[in-house]
Image (cartoon, rainbow, N blue to C red; front, top):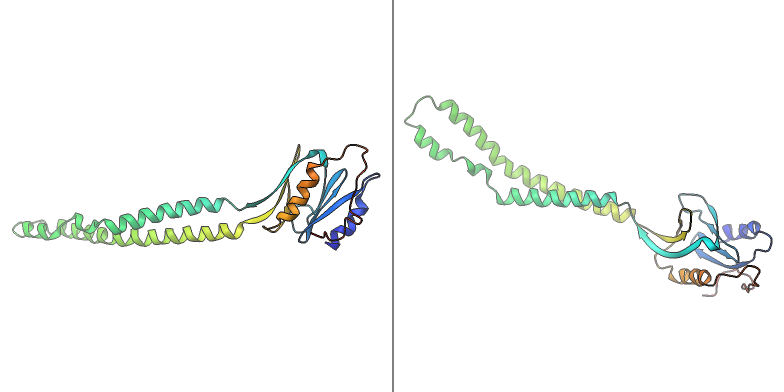
Length: 209
């Protein structure tokens, strides 16, 4: 908290007073009577952002992840079901009964080449069951891999809705409900222009909660 809180007072405007400083790990929100000062050194974007309090529409803890992995997971699961289901239940090798054909063709001449071709086709059809089964298992592996990558990509953080601008993301632990409640309490009590505020004796000191 010390790294960003030390810079908070340097960024205050004339007449601006700090009401509270809320820490989210290495990140933090400083609430003043005019703005929210967000310090986010762990974010992928800018390390600092100031938002006028009238433009702050709300705050919530949310989890998000890279949703493209969900698409791969669905395709892998569907492919696995089809491959394993068809490969396990169908007997493609039995579509051509060479035993019956050999009996009928025994008394005929000139069908040797045709029987050889049918024998080759029958062997390939017999292998198709195993190929589909293996492909289905591989598709299930892709499904599980995509699920793992999606879970790994999920991040927890504080989202602050901003009117007329991009929402603000502050990396925060999933259980930071106490900090969220403190911030929401300040947002519900919008100070009147020129009104006196009653900040804590030293808002940048750790909160007693």
